[in-house]
Image 1 (cartoon, rainbow, N blue to C red):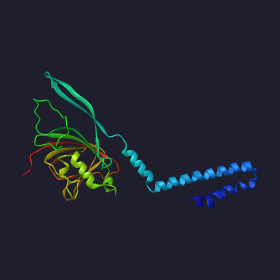
Image 2 (cartoon, one colour; image 1 turned 120 degrees about the horizontal axis):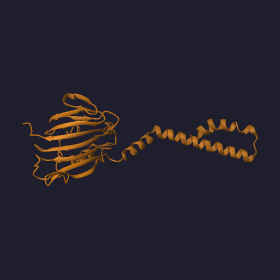
Image 3 (tube, helix red, strand yellow; image 1 turned 90 degrees about the vertical axis):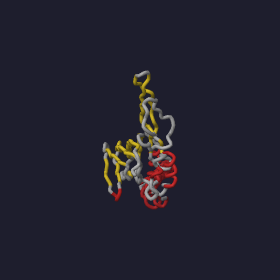
Image 4 (cartoon, rainbow, N blue to C red; image 1 turned 180 degrees about the vertical axis):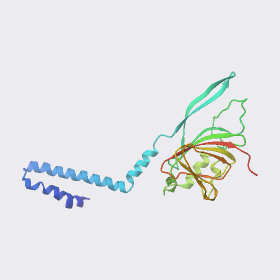
Length: 246
């Protein structure tokens, strides 16, 4: 880079200065200006090289990863002295997967089995399974990062599976070994594309392109969600526990 400045650009600039026969002081100032200009050019060249090497884009990725997690407002009602009231009104911060940048999960509510309205409905601790049993329900927001995240050389599939087994209890157990995106649960799911565009894959490679507002009723069938786009996709899942098919 120094040779580039000294041998090509700088001689042409200094060559225009020498015939002026300036005093020593003025010439020194001009020389200093030329050298400063050269240093600024070097900085520009360095920035371009960094961009070509992907360093700049990587910094942009990191800044995007540092964004605040998604938040959803959850309002829970109840009955007090025979009258309906608001029992709670609070924001729910999405859980951000540490092993998969941009992958978020928010468990809004879960009823493990058929609710008994004679009792107060509560959700005080994380359940043993996010997949409800027969008669139960669960509601989830899930943000899927672009598929390129999983194809990146730095992606650790084993670490991602271990984290999913903790966060997505009862669901990650059904992720297939050969293709972890493929799974099937004993539920009837109402799957809504909340924001973005998603691709659903079924058996034999059948794929459907879904857009915002589209709803899939998943009747205990084997499937995978594929984000083939360049932006994150958020989906809303309502799982209804069902009896296992014999």
